[in-house]
Image 1 (cartoon, rainbow, N blue to C red):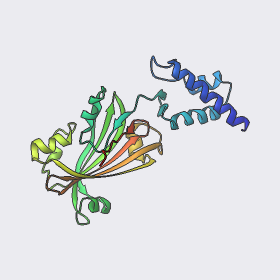
Image 2: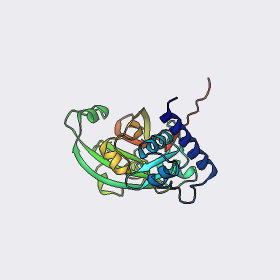
Image 3: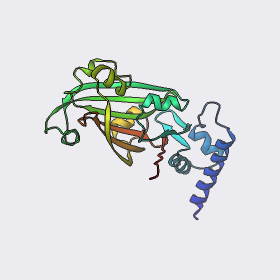
Image 4: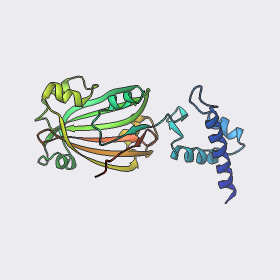
Length: 238
């Protein structure tokens, strides 16, 4: 092991010990990089290597122009359960909030049209939202809706659950759903909304939904902070 690797490993272990001891729990914030580099008698470059390794493990996270923070406990996420974001978070004793970034009708990309079974160049509703757990932004999501099933929906209160809104206003319930999950890097719009550096690690979930009549109704593109959730699925036996 090189001298640099040894130094980084030493810093990582020391910080993990402090995290385990609750040394930073009062505000949930780590000291500044300058303070930490002076404490460990090392360079900022070496310190950032250690901080980056702890971030990759989901122990800490960085917000642009704010510094480093302790990562809260992850939310358990079971894609087989039909529960909306607010219900899922609140059932685990946490608080949830949704912010609408914008909502409009636009010409969808060919990929979105294909996912919704629409002809190329079709118009869809696009709703962009930012979702919070305990005041921390953890999820940037783009919803693409077939306007045929949800006339004038963008004029309603879109901070509420779309699942509930679909049913109470339009009589639409979710039926089959298709998920695709991959690890990725946050694109510019998502990283700016989540206030994290561009290309930060993320879990990207594509969700294509059908209704109770098996009609393709919407498509969600979800970018989760990589340290915000843990996939938890239980499948019954034969």
